[in-house]
Amino acid sequence: MEDDGIGYSKSGLVAKMRESGNVHVDGDVTFKLAEAYGFCWGVERAVQMAYEAKKQFPDANLWITNEIIHNPTVNDRLGEMGVQFIEETAEGKDFSGCKEGEVVILPAFGASVHEMKLLNDKGVNIVDTTCPWVSKVWNAVDAHTRKEFTSIIHGKWAHEETIATASFAKTYLVVKDMKEAQYVCDYVLDGGDREEFLAKFKNAYSEGFDPDTDLGALGIANQTTMLKGETEAIGKLLEKTMMQKHGVDKLNDHYMVMDTICDATQERQDAMYKLVDDKPDMMLVVGGFNSSNTSHLQEISEDASIPSFWVDTHARLDADTNTITHRLAHGELVETKDWLPAGKVTIGVTSGASTPDKVVEDVIDVIMATKKKMSGAPAR
Ligand code: SF4
Image (tube, rainbow, N blue to C red; front, side, top):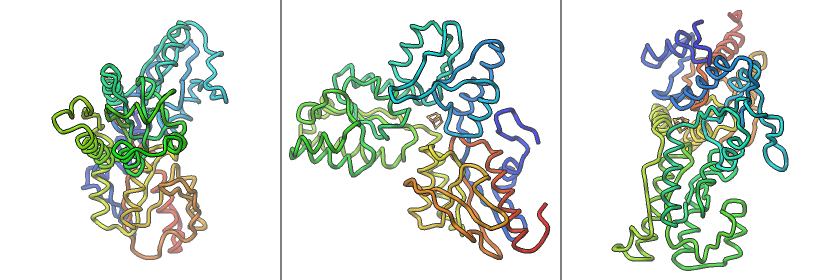
């Protein structure tokens, strides 16, 4: 099979499905591929830059500050090529092994200001694969900081992208969902228990953050892989709250919004909603288990009450026993026996922005092998 070296096959089954209306029928199984799925251009670009770095610095020690993207297959491949991962210790990342003149790759979701300064001071060659859409969010946060606004970041405080984004802000608060945003807005309008606020958002705000003094002027920013609709709803809620609190004529002094929602995340989510509307019997979601955008694709399917199976590699499926080990949107790993039904079945298929097509194809192969075993036919 033709492969461009990063697992983005141009002639495999997924490519064929794309050419034939995103549908593939094999015996009793109909696969329906989402209209937008898999590698986004930011991820493809990052992986290509990392491979190019290896070519251009063949004899140098190559490091990467984190997984380049959230996909085990791609990261393993980089490891095989000799790229070393900076170790994460209890005190943070250990850059001690990395020396002047060596090459350090920054991942697609960026690195913190602190890390970039440290690497500059070390005199290493930096290959910065940060996605331009992530940089756009940083520009928004930088604009908040210059106006002395607090950045409200819709994201997960422990996610590397959000850590990097927060490092550009002087004052920030990370909210993970609408519920948390509502709590913040209620505090802005009616006040509340300061200690409870600080305990609730522990680890999610900048040093010295005080809800009594730091919620007067707000700007919204987002982790690029969060649900687009939720980011927009949080933005609207903050805007309304600031209008109510300070008056509509003073809104611009108290609230800042810039369009920083990545097209790729939006397209994949929209395509998932469309696929859900087609009501397949079940959904297959392929992507790294620590991939935030993949978890949101799974969430859309779960919310629509369609049985949905999120796996990161084909190794999660066992054709002999018709068993799958899969993850739910909110983190639990579940083993389901007899997950494929006998007879005809339509399976919706999508994959996260950091998933090579080859990984999806390997999963489909095991599904077909399972069906063949169930029907007693020899597997191909
Ligand atoms: S999902 Fe969007 S922001 Fe993230 S790497 Fe891809 S294009 Fe960039």
